[in-house]
Amino acid sequence: MTRIRSQVVALVALSILICCQAPLLGADKKPAASSPTPSPDAVSAKTAFWEMYKMAHTWAADLVPLTVESKSVAGTKAAGGKYVMWSATFGSLKLHQARVFTYSAVTKAPDMRKGVIVGNPLPWPGPTRDALPFQTSDFAVDSDAIYNTAFAQASAWAKAHPDKDVTFSLGNAARFSGPVWYVLWGDSKSGFGVFVNAKSGAVVNQKK
Image: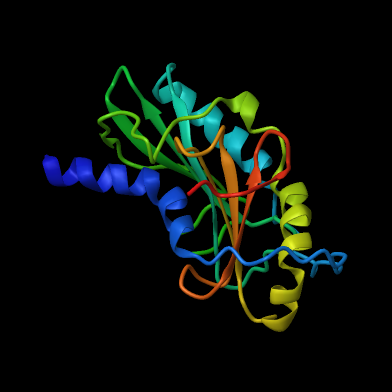
């Protein structure tokens, strides 16, 4: 049981904790280049989130959002903050459980179908400093607008590494004043990461 709880805490905290490992390079104020065209079925985070939220609410009326993350799907193209697949982790204080919901905008045989897939419930000990829940009202700025803001900071690095994928993760931690998007070009060891406030859409400096 202790091992399972540790896995759940790690899952919930991942999108925030991984941010600490990626270099936050100096801002670059060059204008953003036009983004590649995403797959026609790709959707923004909010579109996927509300589909998952509706399903999660039938599981636990007291649910709290913990994370939202983009997912890569072979054969599809993500661009401009839109993806064909997103996941969201919700917690229930009453049930002491967390559950991962996944939304896919496409069907790809044999394992992926369009709509929401519900993961199995796992024990959840509740919020920690590194993995706090957030209010849906604080998730105000959608991922396409977040992308534009982040790209204004990362444009020089992104242009120098055009083959690197971009990932999105939304979460909350005590060192921030509210939930933040973490937009990462490349990986946590050698990529370029930008924090953006999910409510205001402004770039956030990481607190040490």
